[in-house]
Image (cartoon, rainbow over the protein chains, first blue to last red):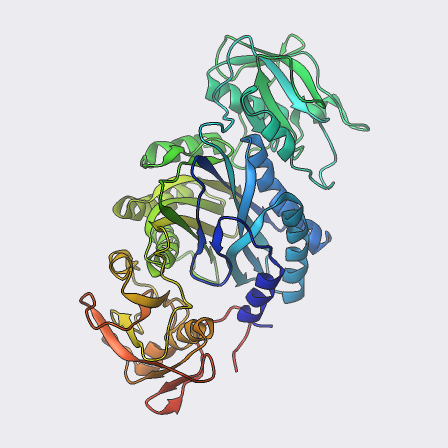
Length: 275
Length: 275
């Protein structure tokens, strides 16, 4: 198969989508926004040897690549609209399987494949950009946490790295107007909560964390790739499946205490340690 | 520098932009579309050893990475609004220089840096997604060429690969309502015209091509990375700087004749040869 044939095949496999007036196969995709919607944009890379190995199936890697970006859309309270996929790989059947996995999740979440870019390279690498939408002014941000808010997480933390990611899209939508701030847990609670607190200019006190079966408190506090939502709210009337873990307080921005002791942000940072 | 510090620095360097209500530093960027605009989306990868080598300066690679995507926006008649940059590299000063080059061109073209993703890897690779806009229904597409239209290109073809790319944004805007179809020359005239003809279900006859000084007709026909616009029109009242090179005819879709002989699409395809 050459590039034209691969693209023609992906075009047949992708779903049509409202608003996407021109999809795969031109220089650009064309999207017609609805009146009254804000659009959300996020992009996430996955690199062989950094984020996955070739031992994992191509379809699971494709699904995970989309799921990571969808988790960012969830964290902003958005509904996914479409994605663009940039992929470098050397084997056309691997490329097909990757897209099969990605398109399965895309279909389940209403995400159209609008286009992308293919390149041939021995080292596999992909980048998935997702556009989501949210009613005007309703996006959940990191910078709205206020002293007195409670801190919550969805699900349990410290889950094994290589499981299937379930982006918390329905919860994100349900939190519109309820959460004062929100972030997805991609790099570990201690680092992601630190980021949220820095953005909001506040500090935090954590009492406890819901630990995944077979995991440890240490992993739940610092392990990455949980893809649950961490959010703050001043109301107790919240959706099911969330756990209150602490509170936002005044203090040096970004400082976190856990059960009385200082909690260092030790989650995953690509370019260095925090101190 | 750790990731937070690099991101904080990029945030300071990036320009504000109309419509971008939330830029770098949250899970997603938030963009508020104007009423009556269609949005254009494109993404392009650049990989060390495939598209560039480390001998080139980081700033020239950053500029080129954005320019390639801007050329796709130009080909659709769009004006750039913002970009997302996914970058894998190992050296923070290289990352800074890359963004310096990219942001210089971004500033010149009114493109905001809205966000991105950084990863540490020995092999350098980037992917630049650009969002552009065009008045509703005015995007230039590949599929509108009709028998009887003339075929035009901007500039001269067969230029050396490693020069600076000047995306033809002003020309693209000027062609709204004048061109019946348009594509940018990224993979060579013979292959890109073939793609345009297949999309439009027509054939083409080429009489001549404008050859860049020091280049050859062969390179002008098949060489990639010219980033000029190739378009069709039924009017002669066109902007300056474009050359009529032939005409659209009925025939087997995608067939091209050059000076009476069949012209094979031999431009660059990542995944195989065309026959």
